[in-house]
Image 1 (cartoon, helix red, strand yellow):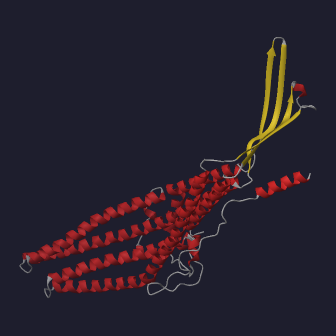
Image 2 (image 1 turned 90 degrees about the horizontal axis):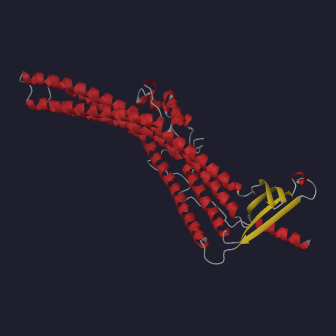
Image 3 (image 1 turned 45 degrees about the horizontal axis):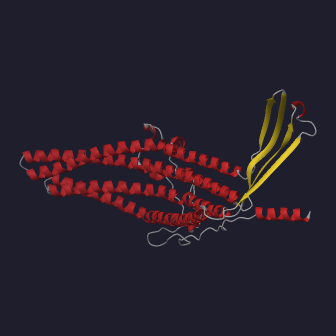
Length: 454
């Protein structure tokens, strides 16, 4: 009895063995706090990130994003990958428990005048591995971590889709405004050209003035054509992200509406928030999976013990199959131990190399997250001042052009001054639109790179 207890105790002790290295999250290879300095606005020590419904307050853009989340094919593919990984995890987890099967059989033999029949019914399991060294458990853990990694990948895809849809929407708004500005400039330049031609016909302006006026008209006409194309392409890109055509009623009215309809995302002070980014968590789950693979590879170098057994009844008469004396059982334990050759050592070396690979990828993911957030904060810290300067530039350029045009029409000043002022105003209005777009896009960028949407 003592030997039996000793055997059982030893088996239980071995069953608790785990050959995988103890996992500890690697120290983040980035500073503990987000950067500060002249380019960065002061950050409040508050919860970082926003849910997308808090980021987007424009009703039309909210509807467009909701449609994208329902119809986008990339997101559907990511969710299908999650379901596939979950199924694979279930398959691997099933190996930890024996698969019980029920069998019934009958045989009939006749030789000369003698007949012999036999019947049997059994419950049992075949080649069930007794996981003394944790090989199956570590393979199950690896499958679990791979499944969790795909979940984080799907969350990352969702956040990216929201950000890309909002950015495409803002880009469409900006390009619509650029188209309007180029059309206004073309109309203004055409009026100036008509006046210059009249003055030339009266001998009050030279051919050079006419040709210079023509260059502004044609440049604006070229920009109109290019902007019409760009707006059409922006709509195509938005339709692709949404997964269906977006009707006119949901398109942006102006960039100013989006400036008021997209919130500023808080970043906090600590860089620890980056460790919760879905792509960083995905990389960490992949690292954990390779850690478990090392345990499985190590366990494969120890004996593999499997058991096949059955319990049931057997009889030569069907009527007596379930009566006393028909009981039968069988058990067939087996063990195998690699002694020479085989792939086990190579598999272990491969698992360790994969662990090193995914460790480097995890650390790179953390560093990339830090750099992306730092870039977004640097842009956020200066964009307001740039927008204000651009608006002052538009105002000053508009006043200068109005004055130069009036002086030209009155014959007080040359056409060159009016032409230069007109081109300066055109460029200033284009730059102001680009700066407003950068402001909206950067808010969306910070939402994505902080990755704290719940």
